[in-house]
Length: 221
Image 1 (cartoon, helix red, strand yellow):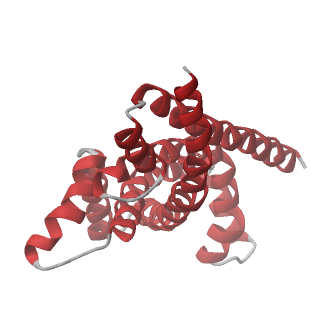
Image 2 (image 1 turned 30 degrees about the vertical axis):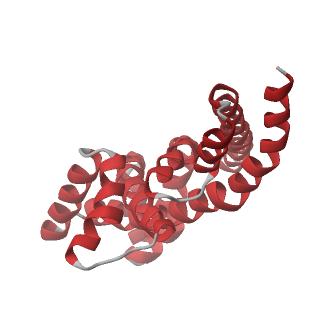
């Protein structure tokens, strides 16, 4: 038992370091890019541009219909077979961004469609352009509606980054595997890394609730 506690105490700084320098940055970078993709895809569908809308629907269908792990393997292990080499971290960012973009696009599209059609008509009546209406009227309401769901997706992405260990990204779970291979304390280490993921998720959940309260108060003003 003493050996177990010694391994836990020695591994905690290493796991936390990997979490703060790799897992969290991977999550935030990927999620930021995913939001850009999601907004573009959602707006294209909302505007009902015929050809582009079908392309967006195809993208969402493919990404949501295939496993995230398979997508990681296609980019990291598959592309080199056709002469395209991508390093582990950029490959993870690409896959997580594209994957999350598909899910977030549907969230934002639903939020866009929940805004009353009269808002668009009212904006035109006061002489606003389509872009002005979207930027100043529609999108602020959309993000207030979509915020809780997007927050949940961000928390899910933190946990999903553990899959990046399969393509040699040295994030928190990969570090736990390394230590487990050296110390053979697999149960203790995997529980420890699970607790750290839980800690990160709890912090994000608290921030999400704070953000929801702020947006709720803003919406009432």
